[in-house]
Length: 174
Image (cartoon, rainbow, N blue to C red; front, top):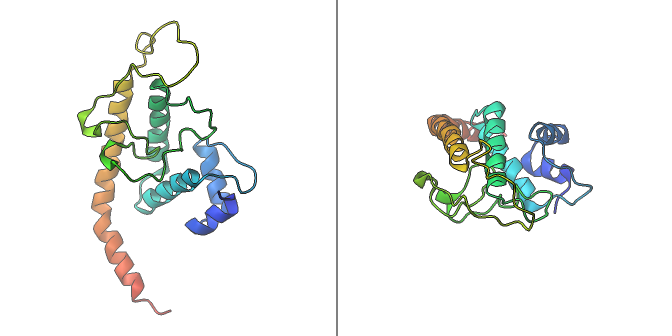
């Protein structure tokens, strides 16, 4: 567990910056040192992607879609206020995980399929299926993958410059 100040120190960012991310990404706030490890990992992912020059707007767009997809798949059944962050930091099966929430969909994302009939919650079923109300998990997944593909392309194109800059910075006087 971390405090906001501890996370800011680990990420070399100000608490004001992290508070701003919380607001702009509509993340829940916690009191004191009660932020779970997954919360730090989410922030770390955002900071890393911003370091590669990925716009915060693109990240917020992807975040909204990922949360929508997870809601359509009824992943929000744990009762945790950070249910959409709880998979952050896990490293197994990277090819099956969404980029920001890091949720494992159980199949490679390249397959572009999801088991839409799963419902992990105890709540009463909806009167109409999500698809009948105009929401389709596969459509949302496609939108997520489209944004993620653009982000990955940008990261790959920036990687040589970042490596060169890191090497150059290592030669700077101490």
